[in-house]
Length: 358
Image (cartoon, rainbow, N blue to C red; front, side):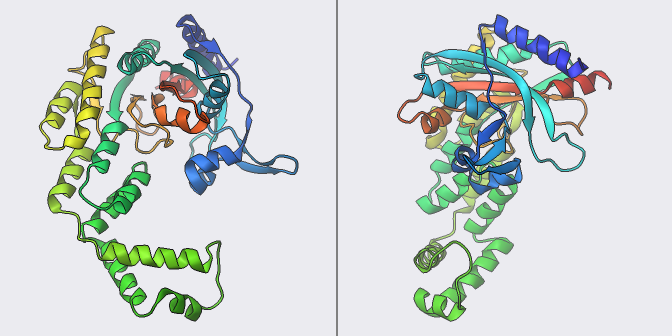
């Protein structure tokens, strides 16, 4: 047994002692579910194969989605699960493409703040003996901020889709404010689209290439022109959103800073943050020294929609030791009419094993 496997075994035992039921999922997962959730972007991160009997399949990129699917099929009642096994991701550089995950998932209807605090406190206790530091964030605050922008629904929808892609999000924000290279390129494109009706432009372009038909292309042209006729977002809004994204401070200080924003749409999310910090304090976690980064979690899988957390080691060249968060919306999507609030996280034993050798 490798050192990583020893660590995984010990972590799983601790999670079972915390009341979690051990579960297993198939290594081969239907690709359709993940493609529906994340679009074609998932292909760049997962190993996809084709089965002549059941269609496209993926090597399991994580455990959360299949665990949620299984739980929702069972009736979506309160429960807690733990698991351990390999996952598979396409990676750049020397990062592992197959590695162990040990995870804990909590489905609970009673008190979201208390459930968040319980999961974070459990991970903190499990990792206490290792040289790691915690970091927290809240995707719910970012989503509420975008939803409250004074701009069109189409623009807010575009920004919402790219919250998990920071570079693309920033480029879109600059374009919507009428600045940057994308704004200039979009203006030049729209000027060319105004030269003739969409159907004439399509006919002049020749044979259609790709999956879109002429009607879809015409609708896209209309959206581009309509967006160009929309006033740029105000610099005040852009600056406020950029300030929010850059916020990094101890959690209690971050809450105070955010309370000072004149941004009514984020007030309910801030109430949830305050309740979570109170719950964390009751578990023995000090919110005054707990790091909070408003942008934390924006490069992970898109199912997180509230509290997010991680534990990172001393080596900057290694991925986080652990990540997790709240994913209420995912249970709604996979529940086929059922839903239940849920929060969980995963630990990478192999990273812990490598840190032991630092």
